Length: 258
Ligand code: HXC
Image 1 (cartoon, protein in one colour):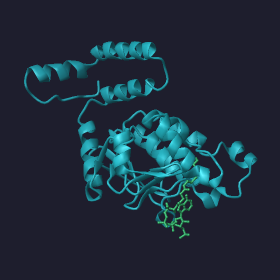
Image 2 (cartoon, rainbow, N blue to C red):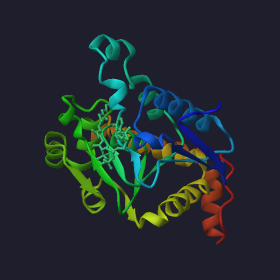
Image 3 (cartoon, helix red, strand yellow):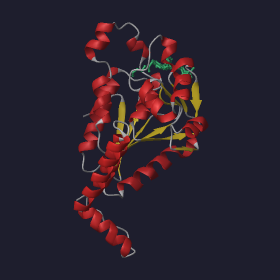
Image 4 (tube, rainbow, N blue to C red):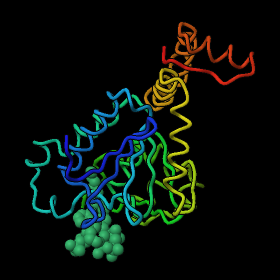
C-alpha cells in the first residue's frame, strides 16, 4: 500500500517507518494513525522484517494529535469513531519489537506514540510533553497510563497538570527513554540496536516482549508464573538448543526461529 503520511523502508530485516507530515511537525491526524496501524501490521506479517524502528524528523517525532483536525469535532464524532482507539490498540498488538527513535518534539499523542513502542532511544534535542491540558482535554492514547508507569506518579502528574516539557536528560533520568544519543547519530544508534535484535531468535524476542508487557497487566505472582512457564516453554524450541550449544562450542548461534 502507498502511504501519504509515512515513508517505509526495509533493509537488513529492519523496517523503518518515518512519520512524514513536515508541514505540521508530524501532527497525528486520523489518516496518519490509520496508515501507521496498517504499516505496523504489514511489517509484523513480513518475513523480511525482524524489528521495526518508528521515527519522525530532526525537528519533531510528532507534535501531538492534529489540533486543526480535532478542533471542531463533537463528542459524538470522536466517541462514535473511537478516535485513535482502534489504531492504537492495533499497534499495541504488534508482536515484533518496535524501537522509537525520537528527535525534537514528542508531545501529546506524539509522546504517547513513542510510549506505544517497546523502548525509546532519543536524540539530545528531544522534548517530551503531555500538554493536552492547555487545550482543554486530557491525553487520549495512553499518556496518563503509560507515562505514569514509566516515570511514576509525581513526574506524570507534573507533566500532565502543568503541560511542561521534559528534556532528553530528564527523560533518561526518569526512565522514559533507554538511551540519549547525539542528534546526528540518532538513526545510526537506533538501527544498530535494531540490527542487534534481528540477530536474535525472533521467537525468543517475541517471548521477551510478551513477558515484559505482561508485567504491566498482572500481579507479580501471576507475572512471575507467566515468565517461568514461558522460560520452560522455550526448551521446546530448536533455538534454545542452538543458543546453548553455540555458547558451549564458543561460536555464534545460528538461530532459525524454530
Ligand atoms: C496541528 C500542528 C501541531 C499539532 C504543530 N503544528 N503542532 N498542527 N496539530 N499538534 C503546526 C503549526 O500549526 C504550524 O503550522 C507548524 O506545525 C509549525 O509549528 P509552530 O508552532 O510554528 O512551530 P514552533 O514555533 O517551533 O513550535 C513547536 C511546538 C508547537 C512547540 C511543537 O507547534 C506546539 O505547541 N504544538 C502543539 C503541541 C500540542 O499541544 N500537542 C498536543 C496536541 S493534543 P502553520 O500552518 O501554522 O505553519 C494531543 C491529544 C492526543 O496530542 C490524544 C490522542 C492522540
